[in-house]
Image 1 (cartoon, rainbow, N blue to C red):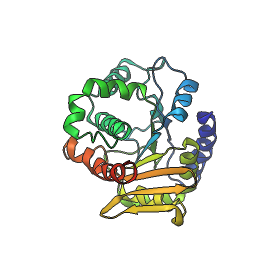
Image 2: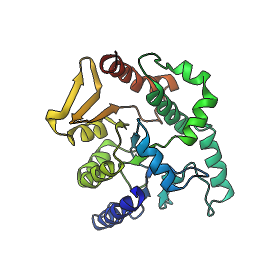
Image 3: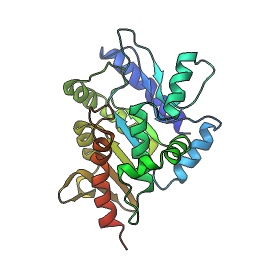
Image 4: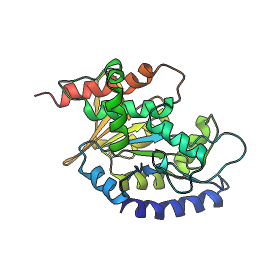
Length: 257
């Protein structure tokens, strides 16, 4: 089981954070859980999916001085320990009423559905919002925080780079366990980290599109994309097209018949 393997890494990761004085609290992550589905069922659907999409975020935003351990795999799933405020937040996540989760849902839909016959521009996604919402709540996908210590509304690049350097081996191990074939990196530093984790000889580029790399290692292909962060203060279209423009070029060049 993926979650059993991840738990082993999380124990080591949390202990190392404490030893290094980098934080007491820890964010768990991975494939998001869903109401009315077991972890086993979601994992089976994940590995049977042709598009296993992992979105690498920076850190979990917890406002104020008080911090806490959190498992973002439960962002969409109600649990017995949830209070009314948490249940309301999760309902808003599922309904795409939160801009952050709505943008993730748009990317999930676009990357999953686009092919050489359908380019899925942002306005088209908006027109299919009910389908997007259903897809978001039923299609397995993964979210991973690169800095496991929860933060506030802003993470400076120096701190992000420090965590990528100190705990990069653990992050790579987590990614390997999840085994995605599409990785969306929400920072140029995360993007550089992921690209550098693949053998140089396996990496392919597309002229004029520096925000996408393709790794081909035997029969395994992994698409790596650099994205704006979902909290960027720009329009939904600006965020969405920051990824999809490059992915369309990949689809056109590598999947045309």
